[in-house]
Amino acid sequence: MGSSSSSFPHRNIYLDVDGKVQKQVVFSQHSSPCDIKELLCSSSNLPNTAIKLINPEGAMVSIDATVPANSPREDMFQSLLTQVAEQFTAFRINELKTEVTNRLAALEKRVEVEGLKVVEIEKCKNDLRKLRDEVTSRGGSVNCSCKYSFTDEGKKVTPRRDVPTYPKYTLSQETIEALKKPTFDVWHWEHNEMLSCLEFMYHDLGLVKEFNMNPIILKRWLLAIQENYRDNPFHNFRHCFCVSQMMYGMIHLCSLQLQGKLTLTDLGILMTAAVCHDLDHPGYNNYQINARTELAVRYNDISPLENHHCAVAFQILSLPECNIFANVDPETFRKIRQAIITLILATDMAKHGEILEGFKQKLDNFDFNNEEHVTCLKKVLIKCCDISNEVRPSEVAEPWVDCLLEEYFMQSDREKSEGLPVAPFMDRDKVTKPTAQIGFIKFVLIPMFETVMKLFPQIEEIMVQPLRDSRDHYEELKQLEDSMTE
Image (cartoon, rainbow, N blue to C red; front, side, top):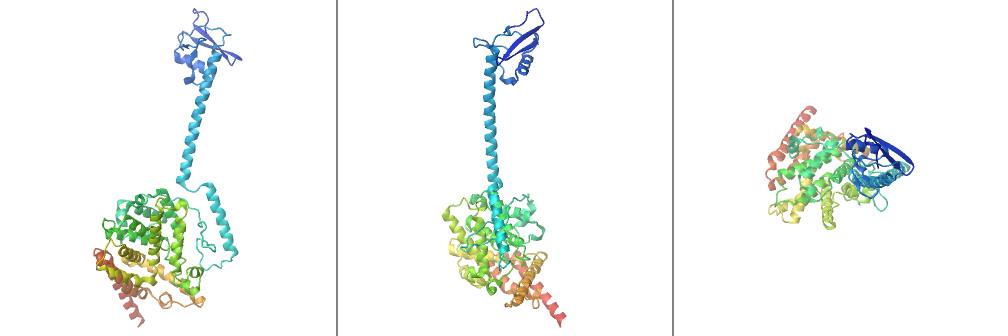
């Protein structure tokens, strides 16, 4: 290293780069070390942090205006730049490795959190196309066109639609409190909002923590549930939400979550059964057996719809991306599964008298530590929630009557066209709103809720009294109809 004579105001440093090109760096004797470093960097195309000078003996040389002189032929800079280049290359490789590793980890996490992998989605789409082709080839001859298709062995195929995500809504404190009451107005909510409310219920009751649920899987499961309710006038996703919200309300109203009553596992069973209780309902009730549909044949005329709801529920849960009980041990899951099936089958109105009578026999000595007693209570609770519309304010309840009658009339019209027996309460030529409701409220709803009231007296004012008021209301309408007819 060197310079021109010290009497000159500038100093020249010669760089030999890779033994090919000699470069000259010119700087003032008054230049700062930073200025000199920048000149060296620009000449050698190296980053500032990688520059250091070493003399032929291997000692460090200070980078400032006192740099020793060198000649254009010395090869010290060649070795120096080679060392720096090697260090810089290693630095960049390690940096790139770290960056790639981090990005791969982030992508893997995103796949886990956000849903199905691309390959799995394509498989779902291929299965979907095959399913549609099969239905088309059968010319629409399926009596019960479910969102799930079954093989001869009864095994599931993939759901009809892929499962996307839904936006999360922040619930106000007013909404949170209203959710706990039977007066909640279910007509003012869109599907995404109802999904967020259901998601909140699972978190609020401690079920997510109790069953170690993945919150993303909970969202995905709820959306799969919504996707597998049909757009029937009555038996649709809003009805599912009504039943689930009423169950959530009864849990709070009857203080079932308090220690000494029901366990968190019991609450999880109640809520999940309520959410799943009418999955893929085709809009026809006792029609199945009379018409000898595929479902009636499959389940030997024994609660065909309710058995189908159970089957679809556990087909959804069998999908890893929708299994909210994935972290539950096998034996516990077996018990949960059996309990959910028991509750959904209990919603068959053909079993109403038997279930209510069994519960009445246990009331006088009811024991929350007795598993049989608790099972009877849970069956009655889901029955109450399933047919609880008349517990709600009249402006909320009455539209449901219209929806139910519309569904009944669709069924009776089809039964008439096929020469099948028609139930009088479904015949549009024989039934009116008052005649449809009076008997149901007087002989089904009030006796059942009054029986539950013996165990939980607190429900009388907020649940039983509205039923009595509704009975009186429809009896007045009936008298008015009769007087007009006369």
